[in-house]
Amino acid sequence: MKWKIGLITLGVFLGMSPLLGVSQPYSNNTIPNITVAHADSLPQQGTINNDVTWTLKNGVLTLSGGALPYSISSPTTPVANGQLLNDLVTSVASQSDSSYDSLYASFVAAITKVQLTGKLSLAENQDSHYDSSAAYFFAHLENVTSFSGLDYLDVSNVDDSMDQTSAGLLDMFAYDSSLKTFTAPRLSDAHPHSLQELFANDTALVNLDLYHLDNNNATNYRQLIQNDNALQTLNIGNWSKPASSAALFLQAPNLRNITFSKNLVIQQGFILQSSGLVINATPTTDFTGSWQSVGTGAVDFINNDPLQAYQDYDPQGPTYTLDELYARYSGANTANLPDNETYVWEPQDSYRFTTPKPSTPSAPSATETTEPDTATFQQFNVSAIKKIGLYSSRNFSTANRLAWFVQKPQMKQPTFTVLETTTSKAGNARYQVRDTNRYSSTYGKTGYITAQSAYVTHAYYENSPKTVTVINPGGINGYDSATLKQPKTSYRQGTQLTVKKVVTQRATTRFLLTNGHYISANKHFVIAGKYEVPTKVRAKTAVNRYAAVNLTQRNRHYPKKAHQVFKILGWDYSRGTSTSASGTLRYRVAGGYITANHNYVKAIN
Image 1 (cartoon, helix red, strand yellow):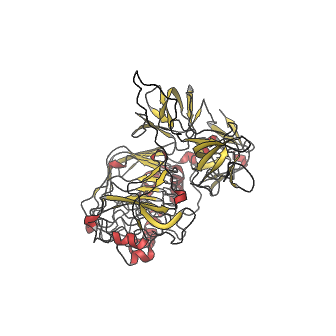
Image 2 (cartoon, one colour):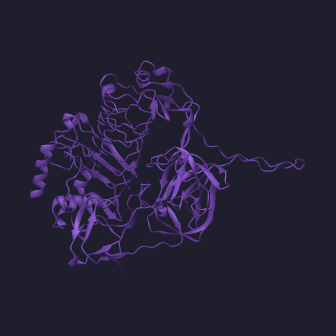
Image 3 (cartoon, one colour):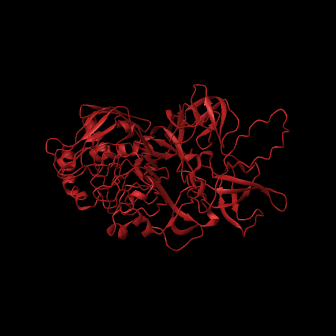
């Protein structure tokens, strides 16, 4: 009961921050470092509000349908540290001896995916008309990398006219610091409601697609993507004008691919002074300093995945300075604008590139003479299986080496798109490539690597093994066609799948499984054969558990005398995006990560 009173007090203290335009539940925007509940003591199922059932298994939080009213009786503010997390803790408090903070931190560490399986209704606090159960609902899920089933989410009863704090959807997905890509559902609501800070402080977010999000009755979207420093691609096509667009792009400095609706009106003045939608007016090696409409050109990602490199970067529309781009959406030119238009950083001529699309030649007639195959070279992707260098010339030397790429485990191997095959003066085989490793110092640049099979291999399997094992920490989706457009199921890491055959899809391959589903044959996602890690390990010495794979945030210490036994939920490698460090194997356990070093832990049956 004490922690419930304490929570209400904390809410009163912190609750005014959104009303003042500030949403910082803690001064450093993080949850305090506290001791969490023992992994085995964290309940794996429960019921919220006597209506919504939930289960937590292998990191996946599943929510059934039902209704969730605002969860705090005090008429002050939304739960700034996550309403769903608060609901989960409250639903199991009577089953655990752990403190509120301990349970809270355990849920934060354990949940890596959220899925809805039925209509989930979020609404106002009908008793006092303060606050909304949608505000902060999915906030602070710091290890969540994906959501599914969000079309089941019902916010149609969220009404800021009945809410004295005008919370609406305030910070609904904020502080989800592991989320890299997100496609919003419609979230239709005929009542006035706020979208303020909806995705604020999602520091890993690279791609945000809000095309389908209903903003017709949004009252404001101030600071919508505040502090999203990694965000590069934003789609707000199909949007209309809300009451306030001030500071829409505040503190999102890396936006470089944006789709606007013609009905969007961007306010001048304050937004220009504080906007994160900027580009350095000083030209760089790759970009001119202006924006350019894609127009009839092509700006596409490999496999249509914004987390991968560009397959084509050749915009052909008009160019604009930043001020000119804002003036274009002042509301005065709406009738002359296309329904939706995409703008990107204008490239220097040396950075423009397109990928030739494979063509299917028609069959020759009986009287035609078949010519030798002189088809245009088709680009493909390769992975480095040993340490290699990227060079500016096909004749390698220390002086023209651009970067080293260290040897890494298969699921983290550096990848490159091969643009052309060539040879050095000495006759050594070379690939001219584009660096597709997003966090490397040469990302997006072209150069040369060795073509020796001892150092590089195709990034996708070309032959069909009998069995493959899912190695991607986030699992892999199964589809009903080789286009991989509509996922039908998912397979978690460690799942062993039986392959029927390999199928070619453009420049990549898929596996058709014996169960009829298709999966990617990308070697980052699956490995040929049966790959196994221990199901349990016992600590041989004192062991620490950490919140992240790099073992930088300790959240529990296990003394040597305990010889703690851990159930292994999965595995990953530290320094996964580094091109200079190989990375170290870690085991994922309930509540975080532990070392996989055999000097510290021992596999047991």
